Image 1 (cartoon, rainbow, N blue to C red):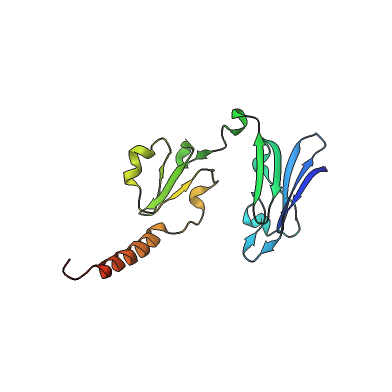
Image 2 (cartoon, rainbow, N blue to C red):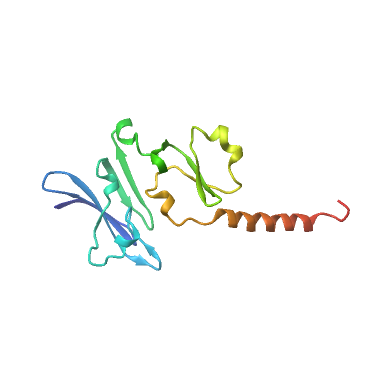
Length: 173
């Protein structure tokens, strides 16, 4: 493979390679900073592998990468090609084979994941808890990842706020 372009940030770099067949492949190389692994689009297990410093960012394999920049602790990848290339950029694969596009609200209720799609939002927004996640870009294996317990955080935040509000009320009200 031959390197076509590189962009270097302080903790990671991006390199566009061209293979023997002429296909462009984007790779990331980074260093570990504390508990953070500075690799774009790479799972933590892969980032921990010190024997393979370059990791392919397969997310962009079927896309037309127009440009990319590695910044201090973030990266920017610009893809081109119009509606056909970006058509599935915000396409979520939900459990049980369901699909959704655009902004997706999700939360756990009694230990079970609930999803409110962009098209269902207006009808179901009253059902959303006080705290929930909202994502636009799809995340693989969404329900198998460790997420903060928003029910517990909500109880803590809103119970404390309620106690503070009650303490601030003048007597007799």
